[in-house]
Amino acid sequence: GAGVSQTPSNKVTEKGKYVELRCDPISGHTALYWYRQSLGQGPEFLIYFQGTGAADDSGLPNDRFFAVRPEGSVSTLKIQRTERGDSAVYLCASSLQGAAGANVLTFGAGSRLTVL
Amino acid sequence: DQQVKQNSPSLSVQEGRISILNCDYTNSMFDYFLWYKKYPAEGPTFLISISSIKDKNEDGRFTVFLNKSAKHLSLHIVPSQPGDSAVYFCAARAGGNNDMRFGAGTRLTVKP
Image 1 (cartoon, rainbow over the protein chains, first blue to last red):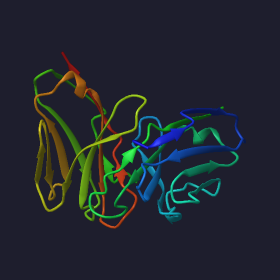
Image 2 (cartoon, one colour):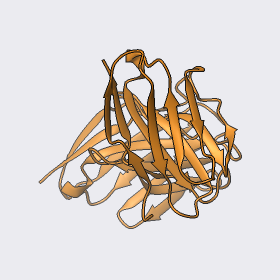
Image 3 (tube, one colour):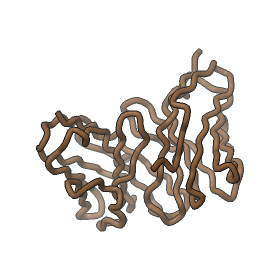
């Protein structure tokens, strides 16, 4: 597609529920990133995929968070047993270069998750 | 830990004047610095970058200055326009690392 597409744009859930957030990167971009942006803060790195594999998942806060990219294109961020502190905007980004050079990321509009 | 800091949460300038947004960093391994601009309900969009081997990069109305000894960079917008009103994020990465670090952002308001 022309840009990075994220769905849903808004998700409200109850504490303890499971959620999935989807990211469709720019066609041809092999590198895909998930970031989390809490209120009043900048985006915080979660995980990076190069192709199908999670090349760096050091930013995932705990084992309730998991992400997949089975065919090297669309990615899904999965959050189990959601907590109120998980409320944030989850941003997906993609790039051509991966971890090289300036590595300009193209971001989607984000999925705003609210855990009640 | 806050490796990239934007100490001014907001800035207001008059249309036509210069906007200067500041950013400080602590990690001397950072070798690429980027500025992103974000409008409400949209993702951040790339604005301009600078490599650590340079001290200045210019693109139209936007200039980024890097002072490595002070671990400080700034974004200058001249002349400022109302459409520049947005949140500006400073970001940095060390070559080969995947986790680009972002500052907390500065909300710029350009008044007509």
